[in-house]
Amino acid sequence: MIKTSKNIQHIDLTNSNGGSFFVRAKLNISLMSKVDYKPGDIQIKVPRYIFKTREDINTGELNMAVPELPDKSQPFAYLNNGDEYIIVNTKSIAATTQAVFEFTIKGLSPSDIKDFSTGYKSDPFNALVEVTTNKGDKISKRTNGVQAEIDTKARLDSIQQNALYTFEKYNERVFPKELKPENDKDYIYVAWPSSITTEATQPYTVDATARFNEGPNNKGAILLGYSANGKQVKTSDPTIKNVFDGYVANASASHANVTYYVAYPRSNFKNFESYMLSNTVEYTLTSKDDKEVTKKVQHKALNIDLLYSNHKRVTS
Image 1 (spheres, rainbow, N blue to C red):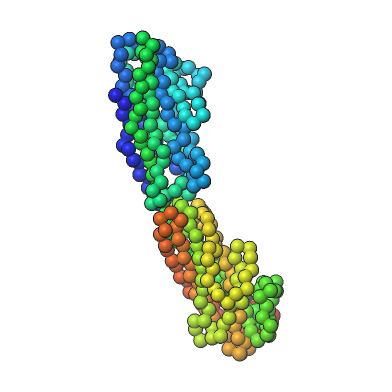
Image 2 (image 1 turned 90 degrees about the vertical axis):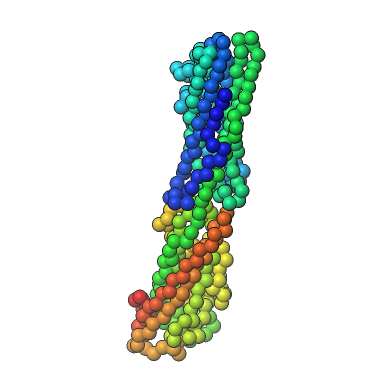
């Protein structure tokens, strides 16, 4: 009689920090015979891998508490046979015996394996037990398969937004020269950078958008363009699709960086007076597997003092 643990193991990684995880399995075998088993009479074959990555590549390494051949210091040892391990008895085993084998699959990365919402489950972990009798006959039995599925998540945690500088003249050290308007002396300029942090154990995509025309001093503001993913885009549309597509495990690591470049009509302002400008940025995260959507909005207001100098740092 051969027993294994329950058929499906559901692994909740929604509160994980994104680091590697492991899976355990146990195999119980009971053997009954009239004579003792000679070395090599018992063979137990188990799969070396049961998990696949998103690219259909084997992942995770099976570990067990028996030595690898040619070490014969323990009653059992294993042989690496490619995609499977073969456990054999290295010493004589009593005719009636019970044995328990514990396995650990280590080095599994949650983001590399599809979430259970996609229908993905690991390959079955089972064992083929083969026994050679004292008459030379072979008897075998395969255990029930044990599969595992993982529950992961991806959520937007926070938005970081700043106003870099206000410029009374177009400054090509900060603003891409290709975004410079023809009537550049009719505007003052603000660069608005933003980024996000996430809590995730599965990949995700991120979209971004912003609003610059809210508030009396923002009247007539125009978006010159933005920079994202190392590229500058000249556009009046603040919506950016797939500003990030991937996975970041570190919850404190900011990413999906966007800088919007905005021009404000100079006619809205007078020198030596203070004004308040504002920007509202919105990020939308969609998890890759379970399609969970989270949105966050952040409004940033700041005071500017217009002087005759070339630029003045803002205070928020």
